[in-house]
Length: 405
Image 1 (tube, helix red, strand yellow):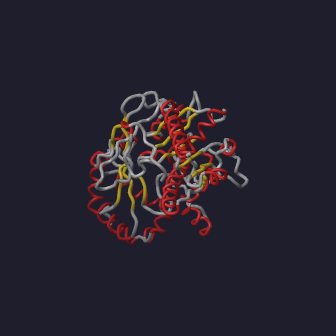
Image 2 (cartoon, helix red, strand yellow; image 1 turned 45 degrees about the horizontal axis):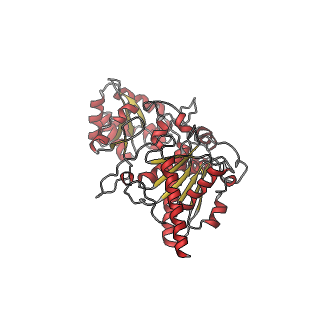
Image 3 (cartoon, helix red, strand yellow; image 1 turned 90 degrees about the vertical axis):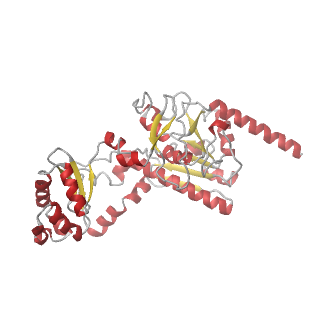
């Protein structure tokens, strides 16, 4: 790690990445998701935004008291600096920031970083300790190199949409899963590069493609299809290759999702939950492959039982039988989840629209108090302070050079 890059005293974070400077030319989801994880660990993340409009995610919606839900989620704990990086002065300031950075992250359009003079090939020579991370839809080479890539489009190209939904209707995943997985691989790649730099003193040039990141998560389905000859069937909320596994209604309007994994659980399920132990000997259901082949008949039998019970009665039987289950919750019910409440996973953080509440980072370090969640920045909120810090740092460097002479 290079020399520390402190913020004003009242904003100085703690954490394992404290003193690390990350400069990010980022927008939308993938790169901001990666850098927010770094900010949560204490890194100083300077987010470069377009003058006037900023990150396009700022305009996705106005649901968080007038702010975009995506932007609030992805940009906590960062400093926002407005720079026209294509102008001579803005580009000079960008390069001055890169000169002091430990990590440079960008998910600009293909070729844009090179045109700005911050392509990783150039920086690898001039900034040997710098870690660069380029995030794109399809990678820097290949026939898809110059294609625009959005989350839905990458889900389609990776084959995920063909697996998701009902037999009648293919569906996208309800979250920006291609962006999220690319951001997570960028985050873990940067942490790996920091470990390498601590050992060797040299930076790394990282590249993450959304298609390749999501492709890794498609591994089971790809092996299943390549070597089995058919793709996993779309099964809605049910499991494509395990039965019974999925949602079942109760008498009082609840939906309980069941998850059985083996024959021991199947026997217990028949005896205690269904109160039909004879089903264990039914040849239609004698093994998981048979149950999947006769899923429609099995689902009718299970639904007849669950539909005659209240949610609490069904849960009591499932607990007695040691069968895994989950209540099918809405997003609002997730916000009030008793497990998250019991573990105190929600914490306040500041924003331009006042104090909000969000989940603390999911990795718990035992023996340490959770770090305070950082503020969501206004567009350009830190432009003046960051540029003043740059000027002071430049002046100190020149003065030091003069003394050396």
